[in-house]
Amino acid sequence: MRIRVAIFSMIMPGLGQLLNRQYLKAIVFLIGEHILNFLAKVNKALYLDLNGFHREAVEIVHIEFAMFYPGFYVLCVLDSVINAGKTEDKRFINWFALAGLIGTVGVIFSPRNPFMPVFSVGVFMVIFMLVGSFVCRKYNPEKG
Image 1 (cartoon, rainbow, N blue to C red):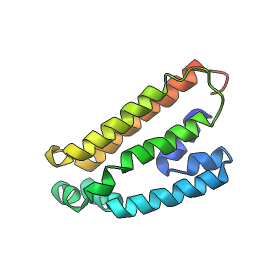
Image 2: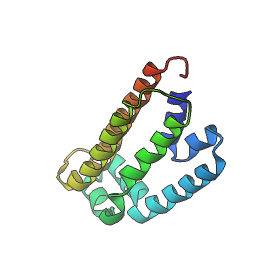
Image 3: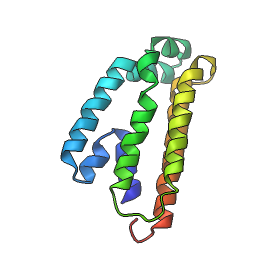
């Protein structure tokens, strides 16, 4: 269940909360994600980056808002994973903290990244959050 909730939340922050039946929190996260995404121009940058316009992707991002996006994104996924079931061991949270840190540092240094600067930051964040979700499942196999 945790992996599924994490993946849904990675697809769209707030969807994991819907699976956890936390409807008010889901609405708040969905609205917050759309506002922050719009202000930071993340979708436009991602579109340009995936189509080979890497410099244009970096230039279009509104850095003041983009700095908050990784933390918000990780918070939404972490919240859905934590609320998917009870867990005794909280060490998996370190993976999520690392994902947020990588995302924020990636945003800062994206102008110096010659290879898909927007997409690569997101991929690294997702990898670390999936590892954290798997580690949480490993510590609590009966809660899956």
